[in-house]
Image (cartoon, rainbow, N blue to C red; front, side, top):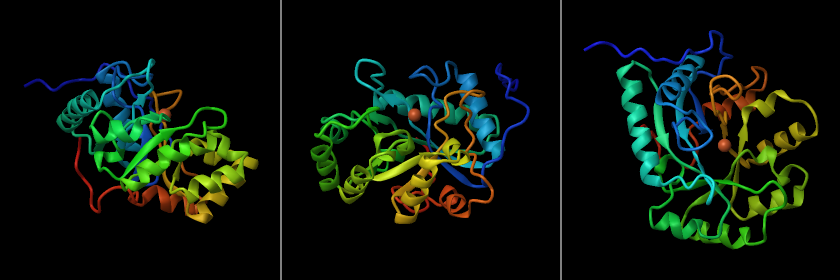
Length: 251
Ligand SMILES: [Fe+2]
């Protein structure tokens, strides 16, 4: 059988990710949200991530009612297809399923009915995107409903939310059982938000990192952690606490 040659060119030089890194937030499934448009582009993104050092990617397409009504079944199907393509092309990547869920009070019920996906499809955590401004008060009840089911709310790109400027809210969410996901491009920026993130890390509130990749160039799938930042390097290489030990299951 003729070897498939991807139509998408991978940029020649990619910044390096820590070897064995876990990318827990990325948009790599084609034609589901504002991530890659084609399967060829998706494969090229996974190849770029693998060559940069990432070993596991949790695909987290948006789920936003009325904008990206991505269903769990189509995420799993698209991920299975991507996994087969990557395996066929010799790309070593552990691909897991997930979703980036816009905060909504029906998340616990829709998870229970398998309409939505947890992180890694492991049933222990969900990636939740907060609205740009202060979250509506129902977040407390939603997080409580998740926690009583043993599910941890993980705040997507927490450094881009109201938590950065509202330490009281960040502490309240952490006390409510939430943990935070940080996008690695933010680690290369100096300033106040960087000090806030370091504080979250010291308190043990950061569960995982993500590239939040959407494409090959503008938001590439590379977990770029500055080499001198040992604590952040450590978390980039550690298996996230919400996955089962030794998790290597794809889709
Ligand atoms: Fe995202």
